[in-house]
Image (cartoon, rainbow, N blue to C red; front, side, top):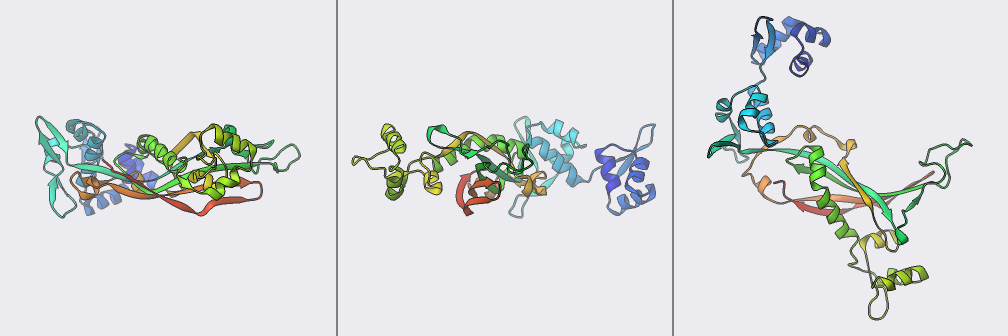
Length: 313
């Protein structure tokens, strides 16, 4: 199997691939026959060309169409023809076999979508009053960074937040998913954590004991008619800090610690399937992190579940 993979992906000849994988030419032919995989010889060179099984060609064809390529170009890249693909079917999710493509006007359209399952993470820093970045860099950035005296900086403190979305379904690959959903997720998180919609007069009273805070709250119309600070944001309440907000730079990517095959290999679902058409709710987990030279504190310790609703179409 390793030798055949090299022949398909690296375009190696059968002898070279067999030698690299520690097998023989005869063993490769036996395996191809046992698994009903066809092959042919190429032109004058006689190079062995393996023809991918139909399931692999269908996947390649539908993936290319999912990228917006035409049926003819997708078929060519998959090593097949549009005519052959028009005769192929897949389960539409209800047990019914449906043609993978249909003719709409003069153009072939795919009846299936490639659906990936990613583990996304949105993360960034925090700023407080006077737009001050939370945390202390110290003389040397990083908790284990050694200074001239050979010891870590005791003043170091790194503070950040992150929002983990495990099992985020998308018709895009990992990079495209992160780029496409970032504006929505950032707006969603800002609305959840920076809006002054949490009633907490006790915390507001505590904040107002600081003269700088009291002045800022007055100037920014955060007081009620009785000149009391009643409403705070979810972020202020969570970390007990006034005017706490997300720093402008917010990052998003795929969590490399939770990568699985479904993030790179899609499942093909019918465009009419309920899963594709129905809005999806995913419980993202929000946490903040406080890292010092000797300690890591996480708030909330088990995370705060925040449901995010979207449709994969």
